[in-house]
Amino acid sequence: MPESKRDMPRFSAERFGKTDFAKVDAHVITAEEYEELPELTDEMMNRAVCMLGGEPVPHATGPLKEQVMLDLDADVIARFRALGTGWQDRVNEILREALG
Image 1 (cartoon, rainbow, N blue to C red):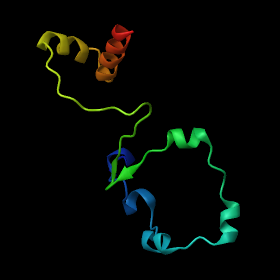
Image 2: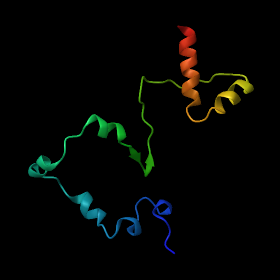
Image 3: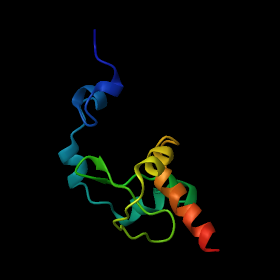
Image 4: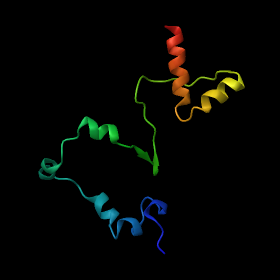
């Protein structure tokens, strides 16, 4: 039984057919072809996923952040982690509110 598309490598002949990716990569877009390209909207850019080496690259969606080492009690971290994904952003929001 063929494996599901989800379990296949991102770029495989089985998933994408017999596409000649080298030919696609070598193609140079002409001025006439630019006229056929759709205008990129903010919605499209917000859905975009940047990739590097086949892996998604996280991108900032708000103000720049700075990574710091911060010692917090284990029970405090455990309670925030129990809230699930985004717990560090919630810690940041609470600290911002506390600072007024």
